[in-house]
Length: 227
Image 1 (cartoon, rainbow, N blue to C red):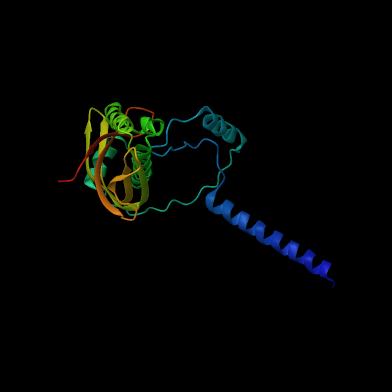
Image 2: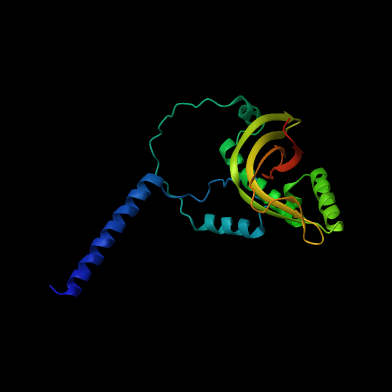
């Protein structure tokens, strides 16, 4: 048999394998019905009309068949008291998902503040915190100072406190980060920080969200220094 025959057999074999994998995935995952409720992550920003239209179109394309899987009861995991306090007001609260979003927001806020990017900061901060940040940026500009910040990474982030007041949930997080930050004056001279020195930074930030709102976003409402 020539090379063409072997290529033909290879194509048939690959097609059979692909078909088998597709059937296995279909059996394990089932078909989407188009009626699932989409969960939006925290700190996601407002949902655009494009996102909504895409979701509606996707729902219209999906069929109505679903493969049911046998229910496997998993042992219930203990819930941290701080997390349970938030879940009492918002049953959909997911601590791991929240922390993931908070870490991304932390890096975004730190770098945006250093760059003086108010447009990025505005939707992530409460009005009071935004006004404080904006004032600090304006004062820095008036002095002719610039800040160059390199976000090296997060060493850790943990929920240290939670509370719910009138259905407004608040989550306080301790961030341990590594930054390289240099502040220069109008003449370009370094007046704070060092370009080759990694600084260990601890920040305690509090995020809040009205659990009665359909908006999934959390905003930064307070920043404090550790004792």
